[in-house]
Image 1 (cartoon, one colour):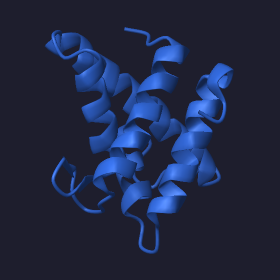
Image 2 (cartoon, one colour; image 1 turned 60 degrees about the vertical axis):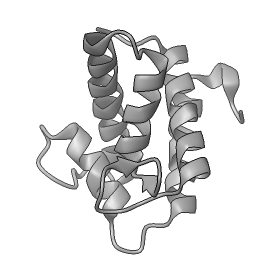
Image 3 (tube, rainbow, N blue to C red; image 1 turned 90 degrees about the vertical axis):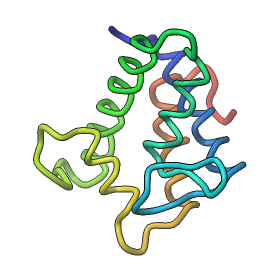
Length: 123
């Protein structure tokens, strides 16, 4: 499955809203009652976008998480936070880095969304 860049941008922007509305966490995946990490927020946004098609949302989530993983590795100067094949795990390590803040996570999620879908920059 290749996710359309506009859909990716939309899903990541919805993930940003999930974090803004429910809070941000480190070291845990997600929970609407107590917040989301980056991956948990993206997973929730994929579920909302394609809730009736379990295979499609899982494939969408995997692709967006891997692509965002490549993106955060580039933020780290091209050095993976974990081994190179674990692209989504790099997102988790970025999210969970000591000293990382919610504001920093939202800033980089917005930059990623704007890069993959420049038509909606700043939304």
